[in-house]
Image 1 (spheres, rainbow, N blue to C red):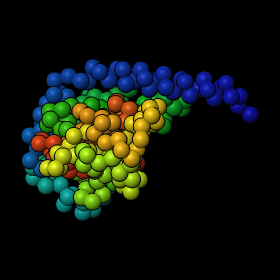
Image 2: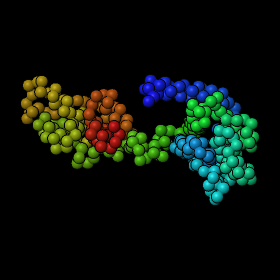
Image 3: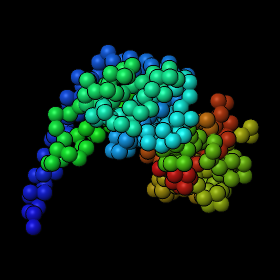
Image 4: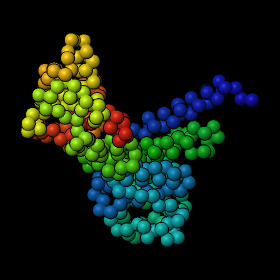
Length: 324
């Protein structure tokens, strides 16, 4: 039975080998890398990524990363390409082909078709003198000194460097396109990231009769009843034109209890917090979360540029919306 320390040592050795391989990759971030980025930026169609076996799995990940960061891309299996899927590749596309040896038969079979369509071909291989590298418009060397596999056979370091090069391309292109966090969220609407980046305050705030609000001359008792009815842990105080004057919260109530206050005849305007924190309806919900956390508050009112009361929300609303 192999010893636990031996297993740990082997795991660390793999990490070391792959770290060294990635570190050596920086020499491939050169003029050819820049040309590859420029080719993709000038592409009128899509980026078509292809690769066989483990390189194919990496190619699929690279295509997915490109697509989610502003560069339309998809993966085509080179074996299937020879049996009809080449129809997915159209004039105006750019092809990225992955092959560690640069001699993968399935890829070399479709290279003449890529050439006939006059499509730019970018290759990621570990051999500058390989057939694929020579046939490419641009070759990015992702070769490694050795695989992390103790047999030197299983693609390990080589697939890691190919993946890192794909990420380098995707991020460089992302910045060249001025791709924003909101752009990213548009391609991830179903995930938590999408909810954080696409939801605005107006999408989740309480409006109309659901907003807790009382007039300035209301008593503290009336304000507390309004807070209880609306259940947001606060109430807004407004003038006769529905402009915000202040806010009264559960925290204000606890502080009020430190004083000898008669809730029946104390006017809410005498104990409210004026100049309270507010937010606009078109602000991202995640910014409301940040403001509430920074100011250690659990609820916030929503107003327009003229301080007209438009809505209210609390931390529970953000939790329900999946923003937290």
